[in-house]
Amino acid sequence: MNDIRHKAPAELIPDLSAGDRARLDELYERLSAATAHCVGYPCSGVFDYSELDRFMRLPINNVGDPFGKGIYRVNTQDFEREVLSFFADIFSAPKDAYWGYVTNGGTEGNMYGLYLARELLKDGMVYFSEDTHYSIGKTLGVLGMRSIMIKSQPNGEIDYEDLEETIRIHRDMPPIIVANLGTTMTGAVDRVDRIRDIFDRLALKRYHIHVDAALAGMIMPFVTDPDPFTFADGVHSIAVSGHKMIGSPIPCGIVLALKRQVDRIARSVEYIGTLDTTLSGSRNGITPLILWDAMRRNGREGFRRIVVGCLQTADYAIDKFKEAGIEAWRNNNSNTVVFPRPKGPLPEKWQIAVFEDIAHIITMPHVTRDMVDGVVADIAELSQ
Amino acid sequence: MKQITIVARRDLDLLARVSQVLADRGINITSLDSENTGEHSIIVLTVEDYDEALAVLRDEGFNAVSEDAIVVRLKDEPGAVARVSRRFAEAAIPLRSVRIIERSGGYGLVALATERTKEALELVEDIRVS
Image 1: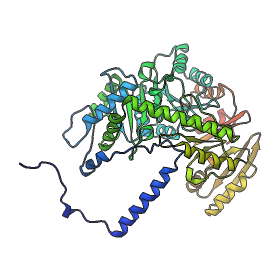
Image 2: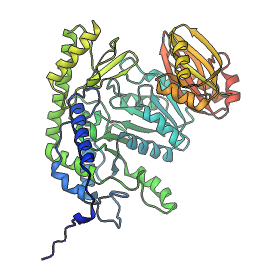
Image 3: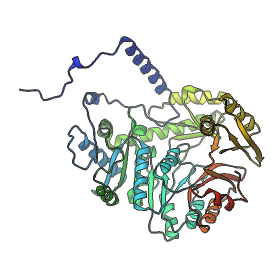
Image 4: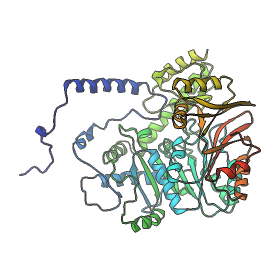
């Protein structure tokens, strides 16, 4: 019986030199050490995808629409659709009426959401808070969309009064909102219900709400008192990162949108001779497997346990900071612990992000209480 | 000669630090205006190598605004940005983007970008920083 599995002929693959191998060993040690001390960035280090190693030997490409039909068969689009189905479920997307794909990360997901909004509302104006991730500004430049930055409140949440006053001035332009589900520095949430109240008061019928749920998209579905952020709450598109709370050696994410809206813009794409409505064309086929693996291992209950653990570690960190005389705090449903920026330079090993007067640690799944103790001790020393 | 505006929370060393960064890269400053207003420090300068200077300043963490944008100073209160954008709406000058650069001491510095910069400059003459 013939073995139909692909095996690359070893004689056609040149060896790495001993020197190159040594460099890779060195790099691995460096990255492992850095991961063990990472408390400032929202990337989980708790994963093991070794079950998927064999797929690294295949030329996988998920080119095109994961719901479409392509000629290239070395793809994982059936697994990708399962992943999307999981996210559609936790984001309360209407059954069989959503569309999306696995992206290269949050930025691509946000770009897709804004691209969709631009195509649907050609005369729209984008509003986003000053605490929004910097990549939104970059994306707006790429897409050539008009935009106004809105003030934030001290906790990082958008200032609704400023938003309402600004939209009122531009009532002739349909608003496109980038709402944060967990801002970068403080984990604050821009409340979709309050934004929709503004639209109601101003009698605005045409609008688009895109949610940047990079980190908290994998927190909010698993807490007991979630802020409104789902399709059932009135959002039109949502982007979440896969390499943050879930964890992945390759950056990735998911974008989801309403199918009826995607279909409207797909028609215009069809006009130019292609049905691929994704932004990237050739697409990663390994990351959908990674997300599928995590999804199958953890399920909703597993993710809930992870999130509860992260929030408990965040509370532990706040207590420890306070014991050390440092006023730390967090937003509700956020594992981002904010504290005053110390005067001296922060120890590099913890990789702590700072912005203006504040700094933060993010209690991701790999952040232990021992690590928190170490960080607090170092910060306390600087603050004395 | 194109101009660069650098804004920061009140920082009496700002001028020295900016000059040093540019000098280290061998970039000549051809004109310079420095001002400390309330809680903000503002420097407006022109240089011989505009693109490099802008890149260097941003790499060093300065809030450096290119001359594609107009910087205005507003009271930090709800609707302040809205009132400026109303001026543009009433004058039928489309705004491409509005960005808050810095907020402190009850005032904010905001960068406005439009395709019609010359007319826009007149429109915000009373609140313009650069």
